[in-house]
Image (cartoon, rainbow, N blue to C red; front, side, top):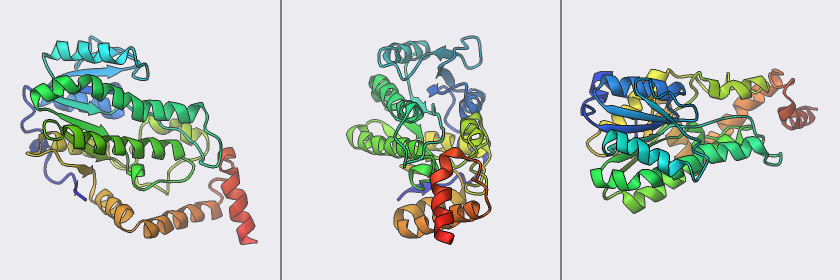
Length: 287
């Protein structure tokens, strides 16, 4: 496995970005706003795509619903035309939410698969001719949960793991002409977790928070590396967790189960309706 961490300074991470033409999805989200600011400060030409437009912002953001198959290609084309070509696509748009694997899939599940996987697929397909012409790169912002899944968030883990599988297939098809990288953040404080917290399923005590600046630095380093890295961890701890999940999955599973069991024993999930099954089984086993 090739998994780079965000070693070195932020200055090193932005070398070579001046003049590059960059498209960022989810541009008004937590990562998107920080990415837009960092890329612009480094001299890149940036256009964002987001559900809510802000054409007067710096960088400008075009409005589009990336879950709409008919709307995505013209929005990407408009961004590429505005940029005069495309050197880098950062597929950053994503949504989260609680979704226990033991319950039937609902609208929350469908939405996460649509946004986290299919929207990135559509955007990449629409951007590929411009990327190939420029010998550019595409970066997918996945999640540590793509390799180290957690309970009660099945849709997020499934959609992000599927995103990685898509990136792997894409690399085999276009990797001779377009670099393909995947970045794996852990938990970053952002509105993406709001619905999970509201359901009483906070990741506190299960996933260690990391600063958004480190994630942005890792993405920019992937964009400017001499060769596009395959997998990029955003912290040293992340690199260890990814290696553990891929090379010792049974051990990783035991570690997750032990952590979750301690939360159940402490009563942290007692008020969460979606965790009722786990709470009931845990208490039954302890009798």
